[in-house]
Image (cartoon, rainbow, N blue to C red):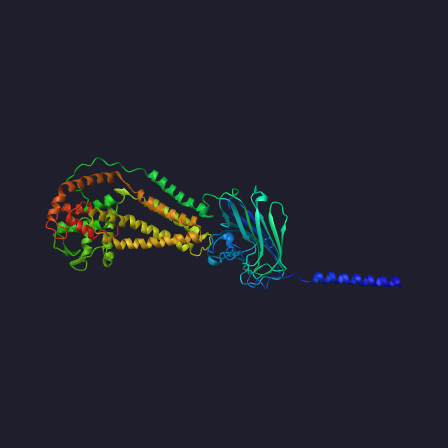
Length: 590
């Protein structure tokens, strides 16, 4: 009987043990984050490489719209002002995602932009996380998270981040410092809890130091929602060495693009070779044969402008084809009956302007180019002169090498657009638009400045007046430049300073090199020498006579062939200079 009772007790104990084991095995694990391990490697170049391994269990109720990981790089997570300074909406920290995998296999992900830059959406969007266990690995590179001074370097890292409604059964944060940092000089301050002193560690949350060779590791258990494990570490300065170009960000290699474009233009410039050298100036008493006043200016400046238009009007008046009467800063032009022989001797650009001026009525009033009501009209005349002259003179007296310039501009656009499409900054949503607008508008403004505004400034400086006529152009150029600078600042802030400098470099290299590829031909050099000799004659002999016969602002008493050339070649004389100033702000064509 005694033996039987012992057997019964043993069976009951064994059954109870089996029931306990079975019950424990059948009990589901606590849902949420079962394990969260963060390894932070501090690199000698002051960057960080972070690896996060996150194990989830039955977390569908927490991630009803897919798995979202908020990287702890924003100012909300880096809240401790003792280590990160005053609050800033953009703290300057940038990340580059290196790897995202789920259960050992790569998985698709989307990274937020702007205020949501730290958000990383992994897997299917708006699909609840499937039941069961999931293990994610996220690796990324961090710039701008370390604080350095002359004495010590400091790292403040919040492992889990506070923007999280999911409990974590276990959190481990392990920091790997560069080799050589003595352990005795490392100061650490771990913390587990919520933001600020008003959200301290829970009673059930435990924090302990873990011994792992070569690392500083802390482990916390039972970390509640919106609670995190963080550590502040400092060590003596001298073990980290920031790159001299580190302020440009991770995209600092992009500045090589303007360098390569500069090299392209330099090689082209060397292959084109220098221009023929000028000879000594010899006074010539007649203008170059077969070259009108506007054509002479085109050979000298390689373009047409308001002074070219003024020279054409003076020539038409000298030929008896029209009468020009100044009236309060305006000019009244009247068609005159001229013989066919005189009109037949006109240059092609002069014939075309004569036809255009009086195509509607025999009298026309021309307003200064700075008057916005007539800007388009005056520019239309300059464009017509440019067309006629370029057809006759391009390639004969000089070469512009437009193909080389066009290739450089296209290369700049393609390079910038490629980098903009692959940009990985804080907010790249406007990178493509800002890039196209900045390059396109910058090139146009640069060309207008070099071709029109700067020559107009030189004319105003030379004449000693008419500065007010430059105000509209100055305001327009200033407004566009302000927008360009604003867009470059936005690109530097949202993408990287290296990207903004790359774009600026591409723009400046094209603007600086393009005009310098023009070359005079041998025939063009000879023609310039003839023009210089004739201009010397106008300055020394004809200038005083023209001033006496034709007063500024008064109808001219004597018009001859020399007046139009004096205007075109900028030989200052009263009436012609007044007429030229009237149209000096007209758009230059080159």
